[in-house]
Each structure stands twice: as C-alpha cells, then as structure tokens.
Amino acid sequence: MLIPVTTQPRSSLGRVLEDLGTTLLELVCGNAEGQKQIETVIIHDSLDDAIPSHGALVLGVGMRETEEIVELLATLATQDAAGLVLRAPVSADPAIIRASEESGIPVLALTRGASWAQLTSMLRSLIAEGDVGESGPQGLGGMPAGDLFSLANAISTLLNAPVTIEDRNSRVVAFSGKQDEADPARVETILGRQVPERYMRQLEQRGVFRELYRSTDPIEVAPVDVDAQVASYPRVALAVRAGDEILGSIWVAVREPMPKDRIGALKDAAKLVALHMLRIRAGADVERRLRADLLATLLEGGSGAADAASQLRLTGHHCIVLALAAADSEEDEEGGAAHARLLAARQRIADALSMHLGAVYPRSAAALIGNIVYGVVSVRPDQADAGRRTARVANEFLARIGGDRRLLLGIGTIADDHAALPTSRVSADRALRVLQLGKSHAQVVIFDDVQVEALLVELGDLAAARGDRPSGPVARLLEYDRVRNAQLVETLRAWLDAFGDVAAASALVYTHPNTFRYRLRRLSAIGGIDLNDPEARFAAMIQLRLLTDGDRSP
Image (tube, rainbow, N blue to C red):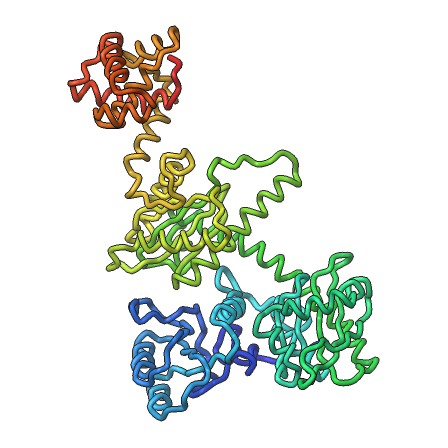
C-alpha cells in the first residue's frame, strides 16, 4: 500500500511548498508551517489596493523595491493574508526579514523561468478541493481521493526517483519532489506544465507514444537530445488505464535500469493513479453540478439564496451578473451524440469563464445553467466604473478563447447584496437578448447602455403575443406597397431614421432627393399622416420598430 507523505491540511502554505518543492517556490523568510488555510490566489495591484486579501496567497508581480515590499507586508498583515510571492532572486534584506516576522506573512520566491500564469494554475488546482461543498476525507489507497501530488510523492519514495504524472495530452497534472535530481528537460517540463514541443517531436518520431499506449508494461525511453554539454537521463514510462481507456501516463527519471521489484511497484501504483484520475474526473462533474445548483439558487432568490451565497463566498459583497450564450438561440443539434458535443462545448466555455473570472476577481463563480453560462463577480462598492471594468474583463475573455463572434455576453446591474442578484440576472438576460436579436453590433454590452433597446424588444414580444398588427397610416402604406410594389414604407422609415434630413434619408435608400421629396408627399397623402405632428411621427416610428421589423406585409 502507498503511504501518504503529508499530514498537513490540503491548502495550507506548508502543504503547497511540500507539493511544489523547490522546483517552483522557495521559502525566503517567515514561517510556512502554520495551519492557516489558503482560500484564494490574487495578484497585487498597486493601483487597486482595496482588493480583500483574507486568506489569500498574494502574487507580488513586478515588485523589487525593499520599501514597497515592506509596506505591502504591513498591509497584508491587517488583511490576514496567507503569504507573499515575489519573483526570484529575492534579496534577503534585513528590513524584509524583519517585516515578515512582525507581520507574520511568509515571503516566497518564484523560480526564474516559471510564469505567474503557470504558478496561478497550479495553486488553484491545489486549493480547489473543498472550495465548494464538503471536502470530506474520502480516501483511495490511504490518501485523499484525487490528491495526485501526494500520490506522485509516494511513488517517488517507492522508486527513489523523481516522478511526473501526465494526462493524455502530455500535460503535467502532478509531480513529486526530487525534481532537482532530474535533468534540464524534466525541469523545463515542470515549469511549463507540458512536455516541450521539441521533445514531443523526438518522442513521436521514435514511436515512443505508440509503444507506450500499446504496452501494459513499463517501457524504457532513451534520453532526449538536449545539449552535448548537459546530462540527460533515460525514463521509464507506463500508461495509466481504466479498462481500454488511456487516462495518462507516469514518467520516472532514472539513471540506471529499474529493478524488477520496482517495476512491479510502478505497475501497482498505476492502478491507484487510474482510480485517482477517475475520481478527479467524476469529482469535477459533481462539483460542476453542485456549483451550477448553488448559482441557480442564488440567481433565482428565495429561502436558499443566503446559504448558496455563503457557500460560494459571495455573502456581503456587491456583485454583478454576466450572461453568455451564442448569437442565436443555438438550438440543440439532432441526435444524442450531437447534443453531447454541444453540451460539452458549452461546459468548456463555462469552465474557461470560471477560470478567467477567478484570476481577476477574488470572489466569483460561473456555471452552465440551461443554455446560458452565468457568472457572478464581486466588485468594490466604491468603484463607479465597476460595470465598465467587468465589460473589459469579458471582452478579454472572448478574445482569449478565439474571439468567436457568435458568443455574446450581457452584463447586468450592480446588486448591493445577494438578495438583489435575481434583478441583476434579469437585466443581464435582457442585455443578452438585445445582442442575440442584433439590436446592437457589440459583442459585450452593459444593460444600462441598452435599456431602451431592451424595452423595445420586450414591447415587441408583448405585441407579438397579443397578435397586434400595424394600424392607421402605417397599415395603409403597407397595403399600398403590397398592391403596387411601391416603396413608401421604406421612404417613411428612412426619413424617420434621418430625423427628417432629406439629403441623408435619400442617400440611405439610394434615391435622388427630388424623387424622395415626391414620395414623402405621396405617403403623407395616401397614409393620411401629418409629418409635422410629433405624436404622429412617434406613433409611426413605434409601429415600424415593433410591429413590422422590416416586414412590408400588412
């Protein structure tokens, strides 16, 4: 049986250091052995220092000056942060050490070559378990279910060699300690969370992956070509299977052939890794459903909303709702397989939005509810442009996932507390529908900017539900055009859109101004409309907007 190598809380700073080791993070000063839980990861912004940091591991991107670091440590102490991460090398300045001791905030260094995005991704993976719902101590093989980092460390201890666990696409999902005993290729793989492309090509050309996925036994992999001056070690690799499905693989960096007893231990470990990977996949599905249920409860309001807000850590915060969907209603394709593909695509967008919002807002949640992906973000109550800032974040998200113009996003009004979130959700839905009906050419809109358009859309829906049809002058003009194939309604529409400017209106319909004036006189006589009467103009405009929508038929 594999023995767990840690007894520390899953999201404590000591546990994070134990899992990531010196490959990514190094303790510069302070005590990392406390039991304080890391609740979130935030990036320090000197221009937005009001971001709450309770229980946060703060990333001090770009911070170098001792005075600035000391001042931030004092601020983080008042907010009960969990720690501060700076880019290596970090000077062991006495002032920083003293500030760390006085504040109780440990200072860590992020190794050179690793990106802040990579670190953020790893940290969020480590602290994600238990973020929603119960984090009970369900175990597999003597350690918490789904805890691949502990499992990698246990396998490394059994084999006395550094280990990585990778998914089907050669992305590193967990790694053990002792990576400093491996070669530069392994270190580069850890830092990038992915086998580098140039090494992938070598392995593919040798047929390594083909052999790996065909074999039920570990295979020996010759060293990759790195540099004649740099040592590179062989690997022993074993596919991780669940029945006929390949879940991933285990890679062990070795300096000499692996003994038979260790090969047997590796094969046994692969079975346990498969169980944990399946547990993670199943757990992710359960967590998605739970998060979707909590978010739906919160957005609908009612007796369970307060508890849902508490579990999503949104209690006591000003929030904004976002609603994202396709340009049209995106009806489900026919057939079970097609429906599953469409649902999976929507879920991927929901997961991506959740990750993107989480990187910007300390408190946020996102989930697929029906055909719409909803997000909720907490905003500062004193931030006058909170809606604009949320729109910028939304546009950045759409750009990052490929700028698909079919995806549209509506942003609701600001809710002062969780009880007002249903109202924010309704306004986000209304803004989204304006976009879906093409009433705005933008891809992201704030409800306040399209409130009039939303009202017109809803009036049109009401008129359609009641069966209302054009009447009076507009009805007479529509009938005249239908019988004689004339363009009087088109002329009236252009004149109203141009605020009575004949030159501009005639250009809209590609007609000479004199001809346009003649048609104006004709439509005034035939329709019986006084174009000098503002009430008559307004009535005609409303009918043309709501009851015809470009349709010339009566």
